[in-house]
Structure formats: structure tokens, C-alpha cells
Image (cartoon, rainbow, N blue to C red; front, side):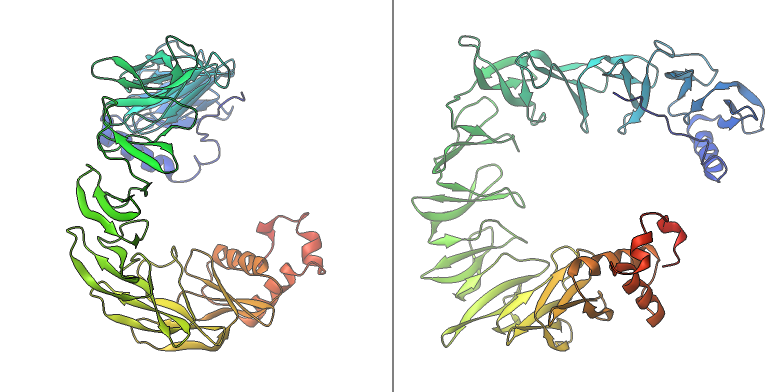
Length: 478
């Protein structure tokens, strides 16, 4: 493993960061110790009066956190306190890195990892192959990816939660239990296990070849015996639900489930919210509503099972940012529209298709609607159409921009509906590259000259492209 570098102040000390760091230290510790280097490139710490407190003797240093700072001298790393005293094992490590939010340091020694607290106390000796920090606990492992692999879990005080030797792989700790795999006591083969961290006992679970367990949530774990048999167990490993044919992902505290070919909804505590009596249903609850079907027509139920949007659509999808995608037959053709949570038709079901960016808008203010195989932009507030007669294809970049295509050429419409990049580019990839450069330059629109420069840059036959691998991007003015 390569040496883990400290936060390096050699390049950023010239900025105002150290002033902010000094203010932070003063507020937290009552004493402001600021890293400072001398002409020989050695580092020490001075107080808020500029008086030397810790001499210039280190090659690298990091800021003080909870009364200690990571330092490096002659490729040896460790912690010191505000008097300069070495903590714990001293400068005994080959690398050190402040990690997480609990003021702990991951250390490296001869290719192995360990964990120490801000006072240098070893929470994990530096002999681990992997360390993973979670919010309230730390997982670690030895001999990973080998038959003798072991894993364990501690908290941030070093207290053991899961002793090593019980499991070889685990899900994260949840609801006071650890679910994972380990060797059977009798047969030695890998089986599913449940470890109760309060009682300290291990339960061996049914472990046929096909059976799979999902992580615990709210005290229950989903078990899949085969594609048509799923059920839940509690923290003692006991089965506590009927057999389901289908269990959807947990969304908004609810699962969509099916029994005997009929669909319903249960909550995260396995309480029935909507009985399993519906012919079909969406795979998730969204914005408190579930789309389902009665007599081949779709509508929406709330989590009390009340029909809040009538069953009269030929197809429906879950709600998204206050709107749902629905369809109705017009003669022999299927047409699409949008409804709001009150069931009002916001966009009439007369369009061949409707597209929107699921990531690029905080609120769904605009969509693209298709008529005659051409997409135009529809403002949901004003119901005004723009960019007509439309584009043959519309893609999204997740940042609010729409990548549009017409007659084999590509361009970009920004989040405000303005044509940011004319539809004259050979590929959507080039448009994406141009958007990136526009964003890096802090531009909101393109002048004709700026657009021409971007065109040159993206043209593989131009000198700019040929030289771009020799001249750093920062030296180009576009």
C-alpha cells in the first residue's frame, strides 16, 4: 500500500485558510495553534500571537482536531498534542489520515490498516486488510477473499459489537443485529447467520443454495427462498409474515406485495395498509399514493386504502414531484398526459409521448411532449409550447439541460428554455463536452465567437484537437 499523505499545507498556506483555521481552533480549544513553515521547509506551530509553541521539525503537518494533530517526520507518521508531545505509539506509522466525523485516524503500517482515536489510542491495531467507517460503528476484516476470512465490528470507543470469527461477510449493523454469512458449527460450510449484539448469541438461519436474505429494516429482514416465495423474519430469526409472490423495494415506509396473483401494500412494520385484492399495481408507493388497477382501469389509492383518484385510465405511473404520467385510448391510439395529486388533468392525454428529466429540476416545471414524432417543450405553469415544430430526440444531462436532435444534428436547450448550443453538432457526446466547458467557464450563454471556439475544439480535424493533449486545458481561453 502506498504511503497515505497528510493534508499538505505547503501549497495552501499562502491562502487565507490558515486564518480561518486559527479562528476555528480558538473557538474549539481556547488556544489557536497555526501550522507555519520556516525557510528550510520544516513545519511547526505558532499561537495566535505568532509565538513558536511547537518547533520547526516536521516535514508535513495537519491542523489540530480535538487537541491533536497528525504530523510526519522522515516518512514516519503519528499524532502530537498541543505541547508537542507524541501520542500513542508516537511516529510509528507509514501513513495517517483523518477519516469520518468521530475524530479518528486510519493509519497504515507495512501495507496493513489500523484505527486510532485523537489521543493516539489504538481502536484497531494496524494489521487489518480493510476498515469501513459507518455512522456509529466500524467494520474491519482480515484475510479477505480467502477461505480464512474474518470480519468484526466495533464502535468508536473500541467496544466490540461483533467479535471476529463468527462471520466472514456481513450486512451493516441494523436494529441491534448483524446479518451475514459464516461457517456452520457442524458442517463447516458457509451459511447465513444472525448475531444478536445485545445478548451476544448467534442464530444459524436456513441456508439452502437459493435462499437470500436482505438487510434488516425496522426490525425485519426480507427472505427470498425462490422467485415466487418471499417472507419476513424478525430479529430472532423467526418467520413473521405470510408468503408473498412479490415484494417491491421499500419506498416511503411501504412495500408493494402480492399474494395469489393479487396486489396490496404493507408498511415497514408489516402492517397491512391496502389488502391484496387488486389485479395489478405499481412497484412502489410514491408521494403517499399507489397506482393500481380494477377492472382493467388504473387509479390511485392512499395508504388507508381509499380511492383518491378514480379508476379510469388505461395506464398509470407513480407520482413524481406532484405529477403522474397517465394514458387513455383515443380511437385506436394510446395517448399520454399528466395529472396532479388532486386527480386534475394538467396536461391533456393527447400526446404520443411525454419526457422529463428525473434529476435536473427541483420542481417539475417543464416537460417535452411529442406530436407527429416531434418533441416540443411544454411549460406546465403557462401551458405554452416552445421549440416547435420540435425535435426527433430529447436526452437529459441531469443538470437541467435538454440535449436535442433534429435531422441528425445535436444541440442543447438550457433549463430556462433557451437554445444554449445550436442544433448543428455531429454527436450528443460533443454537446455534453461543450456543456462541460461552458459550465467550467461560468457562462450562461454563448456569443458567436465563443460558440465557434467550442466548435473548433470539438472538431477532430482542427489543430486545437490535435494540440489538446500537449497543451494543458488551463492555457486555452475557451
